[in-house]
Image 1: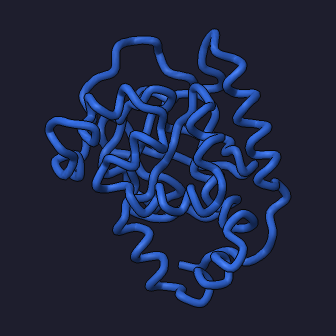
Image 2: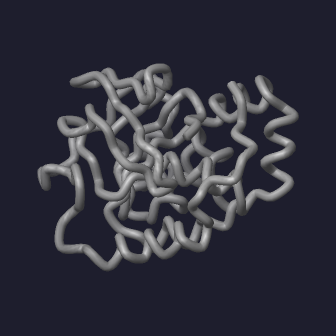
Length: 198
């Protein structure tokens, strides 16, 4: 797995503009937004690693914006640290109707181990290429499992392809959803076992 070292067309400042625009359209989710039904219980083998109660529990996460909620989830602490380094925390927390394909801690560890030099190069400027990489994991609109399969444009500008149905999904052919349909105050989260690349 290689970290991408070229600069993508979208800048972090533009990511913020796109997220603010998404926050302004709160009448209904856009493009593949959810069904409006009450959320079902999260699914997937890794869901058992989420606390049963408290701030990091599924119930606790529903009351917090996405990055704040993820900070309490023991599967997502690496993602939260990276979002802070990339300067994306406030933009994601203040947006509405997002879907986040959130790499687990283990996914980030595996990516860094596979390409330590690429990781070091990206982290030299975390608000540049690394911010673009993270923005590739975010889609406008809250997508329910029933609508998840298909192509979705990310905030980075690239396309994510989801295959599967029911409670088994892959993203871009290899990343598996290990805990899906997790709800925060402003997003639907699908925890995945790989870092995605544009």
